Image (cartoon, rainbow, N blue to C red; front, side, top):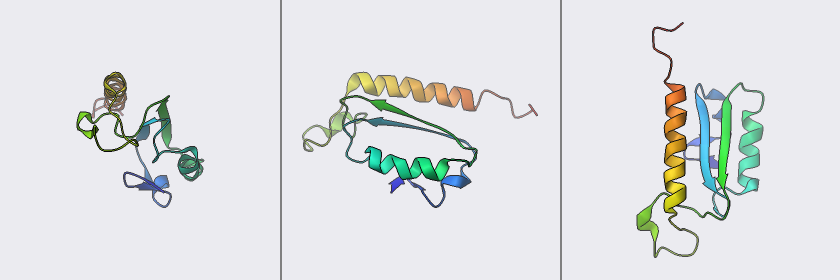
Length: 101
């Protein structure tokens, strides 16, 4: 399995943090798909977390996905929430100055 280029083989090479946002009804992020990634990250010192939105499908941040089938559905509220959470992750990740040692 792969999460946008992050694979089981390269998961231990991550030097930053991982925060995946996904819908509980997303065909691409089933518990069976997540478990191997969790095991690959275990013990590697990588800071990671998931935010899973209940009842939400794939492409929840894409307002243009309507009409593309039942597997995808835009969700404006979750789109806003995940964007704000992503901004908080970036703020935390880049909070230290490059001069901080």
